[in-house]
Image 1 (spheres, rainbow, N blue to C red):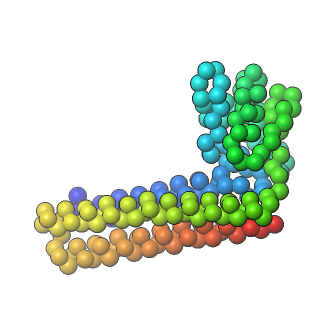
Image 2 (spheres, rainbow, N blue to C red):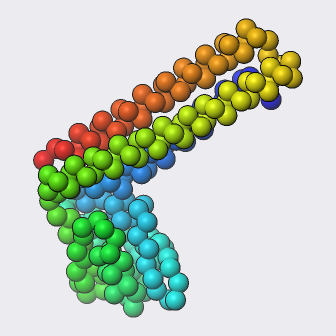
Image 3 (spheres, rainbow, N blue to C red):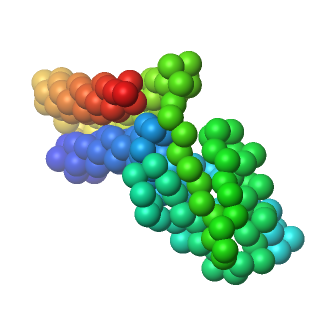
Amino acid sequence: MDPDEAILEAEDAMNKCVEYLNQEFTGVRTGKASPALIENLDVRVHSYGTTSKLKALAVINTPEPRMLMVQPFDPSTTPDIERAIRESNLGLNPAAADRSLRVPIPELSEERRRDMVKLIKQLAEEAKVRLRAARKDAMDAAKKMKANNVLTEDSKKDFEGEVQELTNKYTKKIDELAVAKEADLMKI
């Protein structure tokens, strides 16, 4: 492996950390209806004698700003989906309507908003841990390249500096995402 390839791998891994965090943040409730609220989080439905993700059993959309509509592919799974949403600890109370479920998104209380901020900070910290793991992999690659005489001592230091710059850049992106999500969440 050459140094440029190792840098690209590290940057790709760090970028994936930020993308994953962004996807996780879409599932954090901000008081607005979003299909990602129940789609991306692990809402598991027990039906047909097995456990499936909700998005495998239904279409989820937002007909109104504070309402989700869950339309099961098979109407016989409606009670199972309703139970799964109710038991998901999201504070949602679905109501059966014809061949679908209407899920009103209640206003968040101050206490619930603070709990969500804690969740945001936890998700951001987990992303930073994955970022540091990518940094460590790149630093280990530098040591191997030095041992195999691909890098000199000076070029190894330059390589490590580049990796650190990447780490700082992506850490800043994670912090910016967390601050923006927190501000969105605390906005009434």
